[in-house]
Image 1 (tube, rainbow, N blue to C red):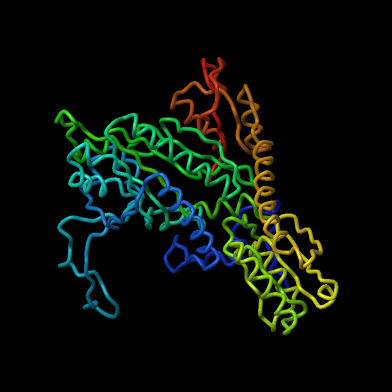
Image 2: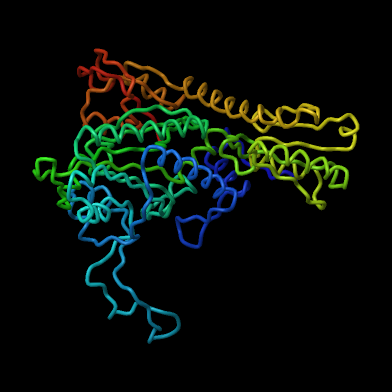
Length: 488
């Protein structure tokens, strides 16, 4: 029997939670706000990680690893940074337990108090820039292009699997440069890498832009962002790249000698994406039957199911097809389970989002055919065994493209331009999506709009041309339109 899930239109939040659980992506942990990532969810993340890692290395970056624990004093060195993360920090005060002298169990040993409390990393700028001080002396040491794959902890009060958890997995790049121009170019480069990955691999259309001063990363001079739109009309910040100026270099006294032997502070960037992307993938493509995974990121791209169950003749054909597909680099699974019925298997693989299913039965084999079903449209067709490998290769490309175009159409249909606040509120409440409008550039207006509508300024689009107008809320002059939306 199929595992029923809540329909999107009935309860979008529950629909999302149902898919995470019933597709086998993640479970809740014994630790509040944390999750156990199951093999399917982790397989998607592994494919994301592998592709992003390749793209980073192709642009000259290398991987390193820095400590999980950060001395508390480090966070106080960059004022905006500590202000931005102070409420989310997990603090270690002691390093040892002891048997409870008053009864059963264990308690903290009061004699093990740390000389300096440690922060479980919420992000690594401080520990990394303290290290860079020892690594950088001369212009010959620059640029320094470092990335790390790690876990971080941010003490969240309201959590959802993948989208917002107390502990999550991510990558964080931290680079050092001799000039401001080089650092800005680096931040823009990674911005493009993230957008390319989101669109070409996740099949998730994004809007490239930069954040308002109020929405920037804590300690950044500028934050570049890619913003996606989920099927409930809410935006998702899918990746950010930060130009940090010389803020962290000055905080940690990181200088270099230029070619004239003059000392200068270095220029910096940081950038990251996380397992939040798995949540974005779920909400961009999935439907009321379960998960939908773009082929380029699917752990299993094709599953072959014998009908009604495995037999010697059917398995020989299945193995032959699998070998041909593997030769083309396609990730394929042959289902050898002889206990479950085909209908149960079909429903399960549909729930798990496998892009293509091949059914092999004796009647089809007699005609040199197999049944091919695609997950995105649920269409089925009979395909000749003689051309099955080429057909599947082409079909996976077609599915990838279709998912992108389908998501792009939804996104484009939900970008609404308004020129007055009544229309702004109506669109936010009734239609959702991005609201495009003039904004006067002030934090006061931005925060007032958020207070009244719960919509935040998602980004100032890179390709938005200057145009004279009036702010949608204050009526003050404005020279550029921006995007607001409710967001995750």
